[in-house]
Length: 312
Ligand SMILES: [Zn+2]
Ligand SMILES: [Zn+2]
Image 1 (cartoon, rainbow, N blue to C red):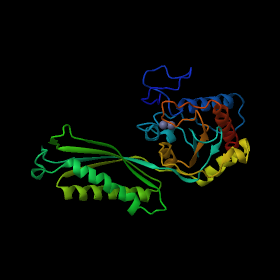
Image 2: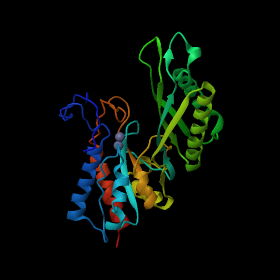
Image 3: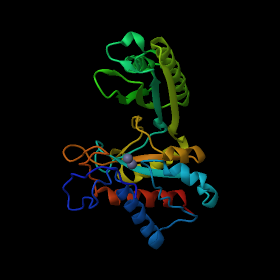
Image 4: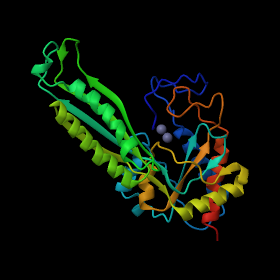
């Protein structure tokens, strides 16, 4: 469940046995932490109230959080607050990182398709060239963040794919760009969407090609609520001491579909350090390995959070 299409190269004895499929984001580890906490809480937990444990699939896509919310998650299982944890390589193993406010970026997927009549490479004057238009659009898109977004705001416009043509002596009919668009504020997200349309249509018109922009809003900005984040921080500090936590870590331009649950209920998304230095490879990398030393830290955090939240 929730694996990625990557051939694992970690060489560990516990590496994926499935060809071309691996858990390169640590969701198997997160699941284990929550199961461990469930086991402890069921046997010896001291709390008064109702605790719902959410094992949310498909963080990688299409986004299990939205599916669960749409299917009535919080109607069937009412929650006053909702919390989640994800490991993060590059942070000291077991360290808990909190952040109040916008913590992870929205993520939108955009496909730009440019259409021209096509033609012979020797006769560019008899056609309109979608490759030249697309190349200009790639360059022009770079000015959105650098020239239009407030320099104190965070935004990313990445052209991750450029597909066009099949032969050196043919001017193709079509060129296609695939964009990834990120922002930490809803207003900036709106601005990026509006400007991408404007820039693409303006550039396309100047090259005489027709542009179709398919703009798909994917995950929203992840916003941790103030009170619930402060509560989680206090639990983390009680468990690990002030040295074991980061009270207000930096925002991340990656995205996370738990943001959808946080649109429904107050709560906080907590990062746990997967370790630094050698062997601490980034998420979604073929060498990634979840740090098993985090299992008891994560489980203990969930137990403590529950017992403090639902104390008598
Ligand atoms: Zn993940
Ligand atoms: Zn992932």
